[in-house]
Length: 334
Image: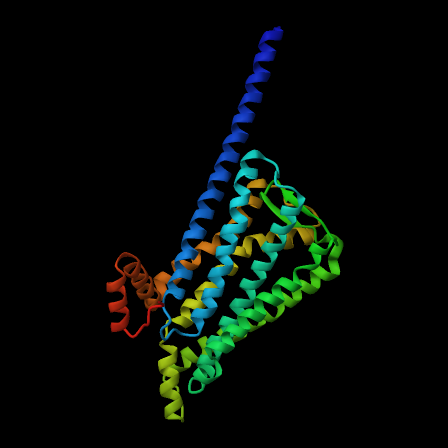
């Protein structure tokens, strides 16, 4: 059977049009997902930041760590995620190498800040259980703020060598994010990973292991000779902040688990995992963690729900918000 040139041309053009429409639909879908994620991250973390800044009452020290996490996530939502919407749809990076390098630097820095902050949260919860009678004198507001300032400065400095011209950034068309090239800085990359992940993972595992061990001990009715210590410990362990903080840490590592697993697989097998959808999903599932925090905090912290309610009451009716804040012992920020 002979096929005329016209029919061959028609089939070719139809196939090409089908591929182009499929590619455009996929790009549009991914760009829409990123746009929705950007809006969700910005709105969620604006609420968290505004909630904690709105009142200057007797907050727990852990709230300052949660505020630091929210600020890091908010910067991610404002400075990083929105810039990937158009390149994802367009199919190529359009903002230049300098912007790409800065985004790659911000990604690593903000991720490191989050990891370090989770470490300090686990230390804070450990001290609350280990030394319940002296916790308020050990973990003061000023000391907490100093640790957070140290965390932001140290993370920014640890991650800055790539900006000094030692490596370049590239736009990954599968994940649609800019990444710094760490391959030509293997020794530095390994050192950075150890400095960031080493103390954080060890602290988190040890501290929460101790906390849950003490919870089981108290619930089982194991005798504690110091009655004052036993009473303070029981009251402290009843604080939902322990479980909430663990849920935040757990969700963070679960969200980034697929991406870390992919990188480990590629490192061991010495080949790239060739599935664009898996690569895209692994990266943006990790970034989605910047939104999940408000869901966990709202569902597990009665204090946070109350503060959010007071925030909206203050916005809608400032006098009513101030009155309710005074009734529960919170001082609204003027």
